[in-house]
Length: 439
Ligand code: LLP
Image 1: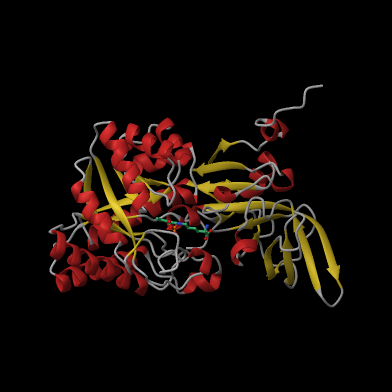
Image 2: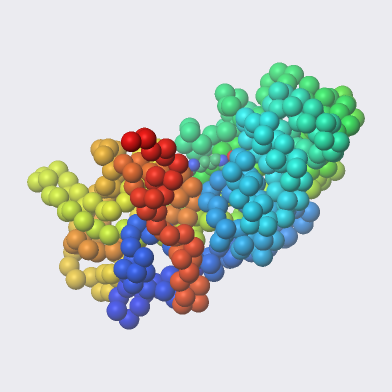
């Protein structure tokens, strides 16, 4: 699914989402503007529930908040019955402030501070996923001092390679995440956690990467987790009650990717089969499963809107069309070489002429600030509204104030109505943390 499920074209030839004309939205709220379709967000949550209910009934869907987090989204996640994976004190504090049930929160991170661990304990989060031996000792000390018993999963580094960008691989042996299983670090953690009355060791976690199209690495990951679990059962008598293979399921960003993308049902089937095969092979009971999708929940629900400005033809070389956003609101093309597609939201009617091959550039002071290289679009003119689909994940979440850009406004649309859920930043927002020199 490349565009939100409610995407249509109006009689005027404008692109609409959630029954709302995107060109009118761009005029009302200005651009860059991020638009989320509530129907798509709910459909994505529901498709995870349905698929795992069919293929692995004893499961929990835990949304990875790093992909995009806001009060408006949290309200929907609560209603849709999802859990929340947080990776920082900030994400945890926001979730708690918004009334997200602490028991449904899973706390992650490879270098949690003492303050963050204490906040997670105080909040009564459902689980802490322990990344390393130092953290394990700190958590034991803090939980013991607070006279609390904390449920934990141990994050393992299973040495599984997923076919994705190197920056997004997390399960390879050479990774900063998790307890290596190639030496005795993971085993020492198991023994220590079992030995600590302040901890309730539930089981294991791993995450092999993000934007994973090929589902086969999940099977290898699940097998590696179960192999390790069987060894620990044999040596320490511990059988995991819960196992999480993480998140990372890909979404299509371009029409080509959209044609052969696997569905959430394919993913649930693959993971269910992998667990049934691996537990049978290693003589383990089927554990409670937690799955942590981020991108595949919010990505397809988001559309970024930009306004076309300067159009520059370099004869025989390239036609640059610059828009009013770029790497400050979407760093992904510059960081990962991520590819996007786009539509001209105000020219969706019958083609007025042949398409033109253009390169969509951002407005930031870097040559690498290019959103889309070589795309065929209807001839663009200043003032046109460009809509980029699949922009709901890791765009706003990774946005910056580079060049002192004001971070964009965000609108949620539903049933023909638009709700502003975040206003555009202003100079006052940029100055909020500055300490002005005394005159
Ligand atoms: N669980 C853990 C432990 C993770 O580290 C992540 C993502 C997820 C779940 C969710 O993965 P997802 O389903 O969203 O792929 N900034 C990169 C992606 C970084 C992913 C980090 N971890 C991007 O824009 O492609």
